[in-house]
Image (tube, rainbow, N blue to C red; front, side, top):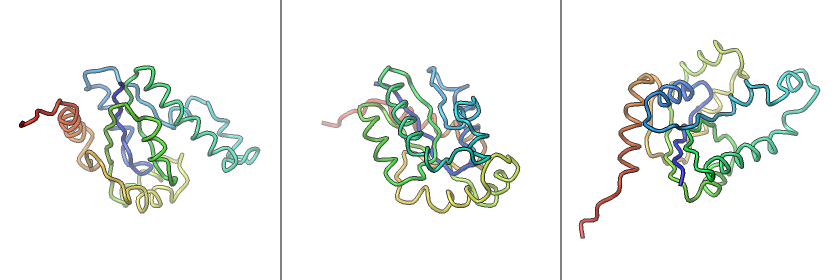
Length: 177
């Protein structure tokens, strides 16, 4: 059984910063996985999508189906995962829960004030303006988390909180019988 720590938050909320800090502190060799890693590695023909040679809308579903399937393959092979992702499409959480059933799944929300999100989004320059606001308004609705983090608390404080909660959740429960 693999252990999976899922960081879920809006675009530019600080998921990557938390994940990088967590990877330096956690006692086990967790893989840090995100869509940004694939994009930045050149897996996707990003420039061709941007210039209109290809339509992202035509490729998006197959891309994410493959990405989600790869997470299952990594976990089934025994790799512990630190996943950062934005569940912005109906049914993705349920699909991932099904794919990753049988693995230890710890679900962490990363919240960030809207003003800070939009400031970060503009400063990055690699996001469609407005996507952080859309995420802010929708992605956490109806979700239940193992822990809720606030990006304005800083990565170190959030990692400390996350590690304590994750270790408590992973600890065997003692019966009072």
